[in-house]
Length: 285
Length: 293
Image (cartoon, rainbow over all chains, first blue to last red; front, side, top):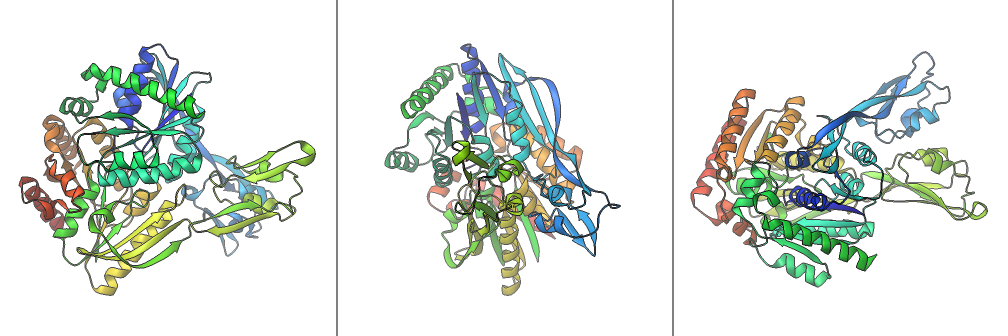
């Protein structure tokens, strides 16, 4: 079973939910992999403290032009939708940062002057943490495209039938979609504020577009107003768990500690969350 | 005219709440909400939309069934696994998954039957609005759409244009979390980046990455520690780190439930309260004005 943890708004508690849920399940002896797809700002490692066994440079193929062979015909510039290769006065210029590795230019070049070479955009790290497998990616500073790296992070997870928990980046655009794609169930984390509600609606729209069953966790459930709950009721969205704001949990978080270790009663909460996810997944599947 | 961009690396540190307060405090400015993925500033500023325009940032492929001979060449060349053939070999049907399609156009160019349609798509909207705190340029990226970077660039351009038109001196940009495409589009060429962080290990980790990004692009950068009293030791650690790498901490803002209450009242914090936190936000703004020069 693949569970993705996502949210429209940043800072609502995705990583808190994902890491605590993963830890509780690993403690119960579930075979589990934690996949941190927030490659721009990965934080799961702060809480799970994995031992990294392998670091794999991740790249995408970009064009290398053989100027001897190139006739300056300009076809490569025409096919490229990202302005990553342009032809000016019969001279070819490439802009590797803009390339998304589609391979169109090398495919269309009539004289075989374009070869593809890998260009590193980040690194994938694979390891273990407290009885679970752990995978994360770090996008290199200045890189524009997170999506190809997220694909590699997902592809680096160990094979097998166990449970995977994906920590997705915030938002609703391409990196988020790549992260949640293929999940059996999505946990949307929100907070009961106007910003939280607005961004939850956007996230719900995205998940519905992908047709994946989902439920909502309301974090800091005792601050703010009742509008998120009202919205979930009206839309028939299952509220999986409510986590009240607690100074001790916030402080544990600030030190990089899991809530289930700071406050043992949180253990049963996250166990319930897993049961709730399982029930809702089976109910809909 | 100057451009101030507010970013954070980590989400939820309080960018938009601070920008809302700046909108009350700053004079002669245009506001630009460049968090096009999850735009929230409008919730506080309650804009009256003057102009709305469609945004088209990418093309998508679509197979014209009548022309398709099911040769399968498109599936072979698509690197994004967005084209799939289904059905038995003698009656195969090929389709493009619109969510998987990255709009590279390789299938369109390669199809021997010209059976692929490759058209610009409307994937968002952008607006010029009037608010009680000045003009606002904002946008809404369509659900499951890409190219947020292009839309961010467009919002920034329009905000600058509007400022010039009206003779205003400042554009305040509300950025998005992360360090990727939309963030790069919102910081490049800005006069000053304010990074809003919080005193947590995650906040510190993400602050380090996002300030490396602004350094990479040569953007002058200052830091504000929001909710600094949630973990004073961690705040001290972040300040020590900032000193070491030569980053100025221009503000410390306490944790206060008034921030959420203001949001619920659709007010900026400084509109809602005159308490100590409001004084800290005002002081932060004075420092930013100084840094902008």
